[in-house]
Image 1 (cartoon, rainbow, N blue to C red):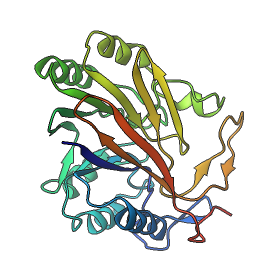
Image 2 (tube, one colour; image 1 turned 90 degrees about the vertical axis):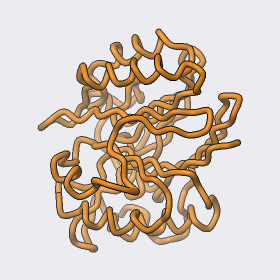
Image 3 (tube, helix red, strand yellow; image 1 turned 45 degrees about the vertical axis):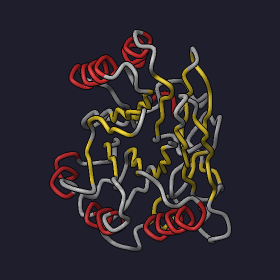
Length: 255
């Protein structure tokens, strides 16, 4: 059995439908990404929402709930640096939403880590999250594992962006290196595509459903690429078929 997932990350929603981030009105951009996924990669077994669900606006969670609650699949959520975890918990508690913790699928687990660091753009995994990861991997040694967080744990070769990554990536990799069932680490935050490998573990980032950052840029710069999302197929043998999907032709490119 193949587990089919979709990752939508960094939608940066506002309470207002016309809220704009860096030239893109975020709400219709997210709707366009979801519509594209439903037309081309549906059905799926779950959705990974890997942070920055809102843009410093807790009223945006009602809009997020409105968009995702009726899709008929579980929605696994973690906060990013622009989120407000307390408001996020209040609005997104209960099915189909799961905040953090461990997701379970046939032959696979997903560990949803919270790297939010209050008042900071960079992230950090606290002791409780590192323990959650270690315990989940140890308790499910025969399950392949997908680890999700918001902040990037490896350099993106972008000077400004690498100043706001995961502060304690070495601690994360220390836990991962002590287990043999980790197959991939997946994140958002960077508003661009990345696909790499570390010790046989696949490393992936996914573009935002709104505006993108220019790759390998020393200073902050916006890329003119359109909204994007990622599809993933988790196979019984531990391999992953995954690609970034760009939502072309919707007139949503940053200006």
